[in-house]
Image 1 (cartoon, rainbow, N blue to C red):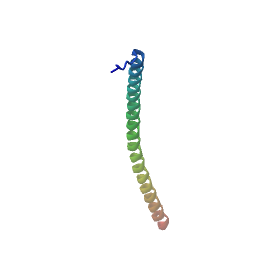
Image 2: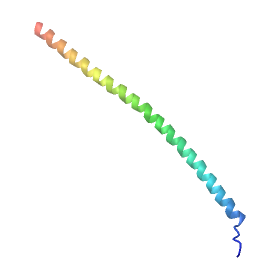
Image 3: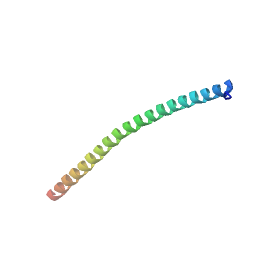
Image 4: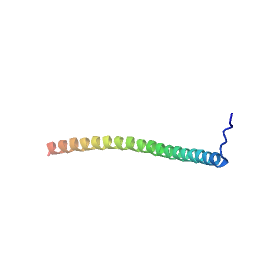
Length: 74
C-alpha cells in the first residue's frame, strides 16, 4: 500500500488556524462575560429605579391627601 504523505505546510496551516480559532473563541468568551456583568449591574439599577418610582408615587398620593385636607379646613 502507498503511504499517504501530508505536506508539512498543510499541517502548519491547520495548526495555525486551530490556534487562531481558539484565541478567537477565548476573546469572544471574555466579551460575553463582560456583557453579562454589565447586564447584571443594569438589572440592579432597574430594580432601584422601580423602587424609587413607587416611592415617588406614594409621596405624590400623600401630598395630594394633605392638600385635600388643608383645602377642606379652609
